[in-house]
Image 1 (cartoon, rainbow, N blue to C red):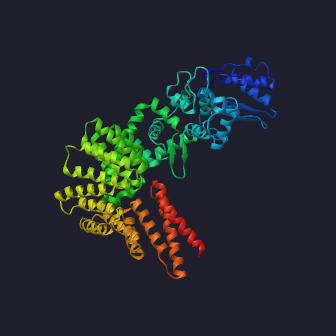
Image 2 (image 1 turned 135 degrees about the horizontal axis):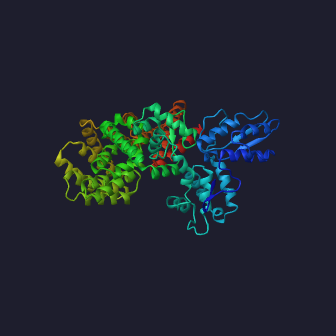
Image 3 (image 1 turned 135 degrees about the vertical axis):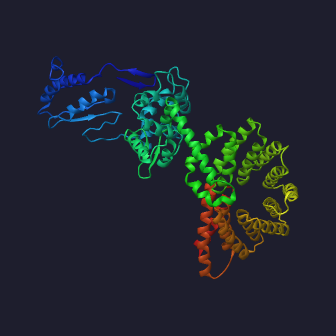
Length: 585
């Protein structure tokens, strides 16, 4: 009855038949059974069936979803009684339970979709000028839906269109005029067919950009798991979802999610509230500081669920937001989710400033600065330190010491070691005045020793590392003990004390494994590998040592690659040296 092209929806009149009986009449004409329309309606099916007897016809009925349900049922009844030798193909976007072989046409695979784009580009000069990256983006946005691909490509250079790039054409969907909305065209008539359960699970899936677990959907919809699974499977059968039934995960394509958000805002809000509440409960149960690292694997298992809630947490209750920011800080650090940590901390700082909440703005500036420190970006670290200092002008001495500490870290990255040492001594003095042997004091001593180490003042560095280690152990600061022990191993490496470096790095790795902080694990693997490489011995024992060094070095490279760490290049160089040495033996 209608089709969608680049200019919008167009009604079809020729070559269409709007009713079941009209379709039978048309089929009769194709078979030469003229006058079929003159018969009484209840006589026509059997007359047509007799006309098909002895023939070998392939009959195709296209877009059957346009028929009312009772007429679709009558047509299927007719097709089920076709005389032997005749076949029929029916296309429809609505699943119907009939006695037939059902073939589900899913989205186009990437290569197939790009072939379609290449074909369209032969007739569209603007599309022809697009890069491979833009065409890949088109596939990702449309999720391989050929109608979406044709429509978006058709907007490029169309008369009256302001779209000059694929990105602009995709953005145009958000403000597509009535009569030229591909989302409405594809999904509009399906919307009313969704059951209450199907609407709930669809609304829940709008929050996920990666496949969502069945349990998450059940939690958000308050549906029993089996009931939610039934709704998800039914939607999968109708090609509305992308599913992995083996892993019980489900994904709603982005454009479909956009349509559901627009047309079913109440259901989306309701499931979003449930998502936020459940995510907050998980963070409060399993998050926390470094002393709670044993709980982090539970949080890790549901991170896809929690991360989907972060945008809503950023716009929701401010107290809840900043509680989550505090509780997730160490988890994101330990598991190496630095990109998530950076984005969330920056957004949380902006939100705090908008509410004139200087205390939480300072904390989020500090957390942002620490990510930049781990990634060796000194200018950004110093900028964050300046913001934290400004936010905390009227705050506690402890907070002021934290801002000074961050400034010292920035100076160390800039190789301004005298400024770094001065800043860390200032922070240490403040912290000692609050509590002489606190966890904070251990942190400041470690920072000071790292700056002294970088400045090649090895005796001072060892002295302060040892004192930091003593206080960390006294406070049962397990993460700190692991980090400081690793720093002592690094110091031994620079002093060419290979055996001591190996022993300290092995001790540090065992501690880091228990804590689970990925960056420390990578550092210690790298240190052991370097120590083993530098030590001499018998050929047989050295070969065994090199095999272990190779395994550890590869692990360090794998973790550093995932973290996008600035130490990746050094680890890769060590790995290359070990591989070359192994090959020469």
